Image (cartoon, rainbow, N blue to C red; front, side):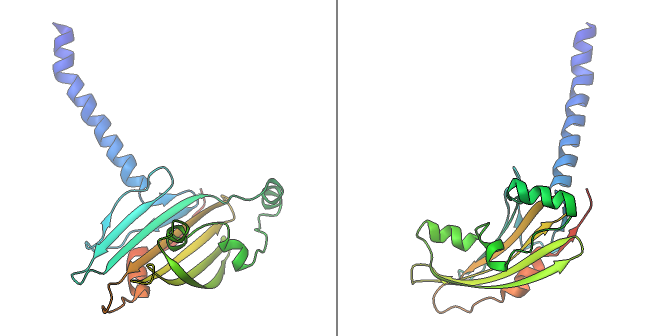
Length: 200
């Protein structure tokens, strides 16, 4: 009888508590990655998923004219050699790679599409920014969907010199022929919000 009472009374409470704890963990994990803090946009237009397995956060918006805008976040370890990691731990500084060397260590959404033959004629511009806790590289790309649809791509890639981790924010747009090309700088500002280096 006592066992039945326990099952009928306390088990549902236990399940509910676990569920609440899981929701709390999930909500906290969606805006923090190792070494960084990311604030989401206030707008409700974006359909935002959660960061899963340290890989990707997706926001997508489709306009009435068929233009689609996709945003992603990826993060992980820097992916440097043991000698470079030893130097980082010793000096607390990141080796002064050129923007081209930095960009070669990851692939943007557009470049991943190009590897699969979906995008051609990619042109890229870089701008490097330095902070007291790390370095960031902004990139702007343009390409075409096999000659049929213009594609724009903008993003931000940052290294945290304390946690030896990186985060990449990427936003891209596919624009139907004859349609107005969206201002991705505005979209990027809206979606990316603010990215802050934090000590963890």
